[in-house]
Length: 316
Image (cartoon, rainbow, N blue to C red; front, side, top):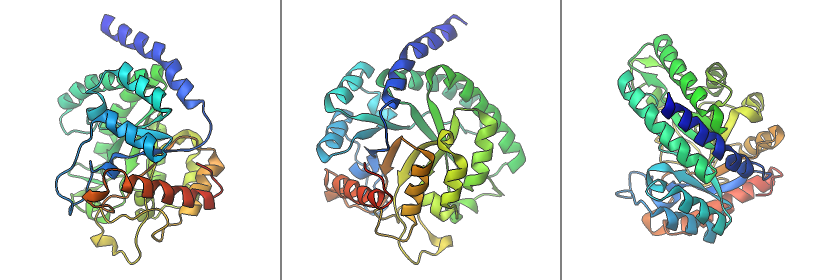
């Protein structure tokens, strides 16, 4: 109980930092680690993990207003040093990834990870990061109703733990047909169904909106408007090439915004309509080769995303 009170006191003291970071208006572009080789795609060899300080410097030097927080990497540094570097480089923390797994089969593993998540939340609060995400896989070997109950109970506990911090958790739905059919029981994969589920889990649980999965799942700008500002936690953006065969799509077939067939003007127009003001992270998995990982890909992705957003009437 004493440790729990200390945790809540620490988080409450850091909440002002998070709120200050949220107060700046407008969507902002945040560097995603896929552009530096951390998620290279099948044809590019092993991943390349940058020193987190160098990652932030690359974000600033290529013109991003923010940078995503890859926790396994960022937490190798002292939180105060990371916060100071963000301030020095005039960057905003984007979306935090690599949180401890929330959906393992073993409940005891979840309990261990829940305690580790508290450490991640303390770090995020100290650097002013207000959003994180986890992936909801679209199939399972557990019947849907049973799995939904387990996940709901876990997420309600996470929601309660996050409440003092003002941090939000986004759940990313996955639209790939191959993953929907991989296991015996289909699970949540549509945006509207995930939105309804998040509302049952807590006020600080929402949708991590990835345009790639939004497109593959057949969602529309109307789904974004229906979610509203409070339930869109963060955004990743890429585009889809023409003539994809749904059953054969691989996750690393993405292209830059504006290079493909997605209705990204409608996508961003809907975000503008609801007043979304958080991070937008370009994530064109598989688009760039190794020789583009030191800034070329990052700059091309920045310019392409800005161009599409401009067509939707958004300056970023």
